Amino acid sequence: MTADPECLFCRIAAGEIPATLVHEDEQVLAFRDIAPRAPTHILLIPRDHIRSAAELTDAHAPLVGHLFAVAAQVARDQGVAEAGYRLVTNIGSGGGQTVDHLHVHLLGGRPMTWPPG
Image (cartoon, rainbow, N blue to C red; front, side, top):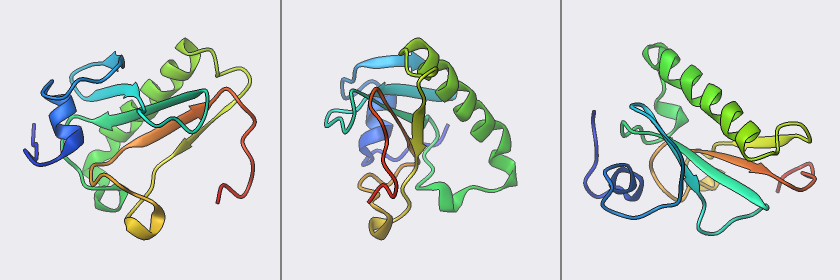
């Protein structure tokens, strides 16, 4: 596993910073966002430090597949799967990324509008 000791999400994955976990396995961690934008707002991260989706390659396909499968399971576990939910990943500061570690926001529990803005 690769980690960046300065990265907030790497430190959460290492257990150095507390988080409210909803899923944990060898590859992926899911935890509640500390500043939720919806009644259900979960962040899903790979344990490996990948700065953003822009760095993904074909070699990451199994990890990305697992990340999305975990997101679907978390949505079911959180009770938002049937009504619907949104998965979002931001890339770069212009895309709204505030932590340079690949993460997917799972948002649910309220109607989502478009465009997201």
